[in-house]
Image (cartoon, rainbow, N blue to C red; front, top):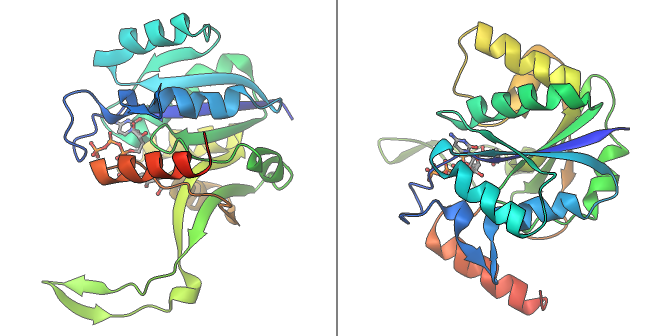
Length: 229
Ligand SMILES: Nc1ccn([C@@H]2O[C@H](COP(=O)(O)OP(=O)(O)OP(=O)(O)O)[C@@H](O)[C@H]2O)c(=O)n1
Ligand SMILES: C[C@](O)(CO)[C@H](O)COP(=O)(O)O
């Protein structure tokens, strides 16, 4: 199946607290967003990559990609939140007519590209595939710092990315959400479930945490050192 990667890097990294958005910070010598691009660039299953970048740093990203010989990665401006950035990327991808799209946070540079083939084997109309992680902690529902309920954690996973779909289906979901003024979805699976179909999870088989704070970057550095990357 003709498959595209849509990598979202349109945020400002406010929680990280760096003057430069976190996706430009180096992880073991390479920008975080470059590492995420290269996951898909080095996969024979991916025929096109679109990178959605914060408008203020779009030119900087294009220069970095060009200097690395990654000129075939199309860079488009992001929106005011992740959902809008994904929509911008989907619209840009339409001209390439992909059958499948893998939507990935640039802030998750540790994803194991070896799972791409596994994911594509599960994709079908009416079923999206999301990489996630089983919970190992107990979770609390909280109000005013008091625990009001404790859900059964065997039924809870932590959503990650890539989130993968039949391209026309996820474009329909995002388009209908925009028409319904539903603009605050924190992931793509939620829109897909609302408008299209169901989501199958696969367990991430390597650390695939999102780099959100400085300690996450330190953890990622330690992990890559431990596996000599
Ligand atoms: N308007 C936005 C906001 C986020 N993202 C992307 O969505 C991914 C997950 O978002 P998050 O980790 O929250 O990144 P930021 O929004 O940059 O972080 P913060 O909320 O701390 O500002 C990141 O790769 C981020 O670049 C995006 O493409 N467009
Ligand atoms: C898409 C996501 O990474 C799944 O866990 C997460 O929802 C992104 O949230 P963020 O606040 O945009 O980082």
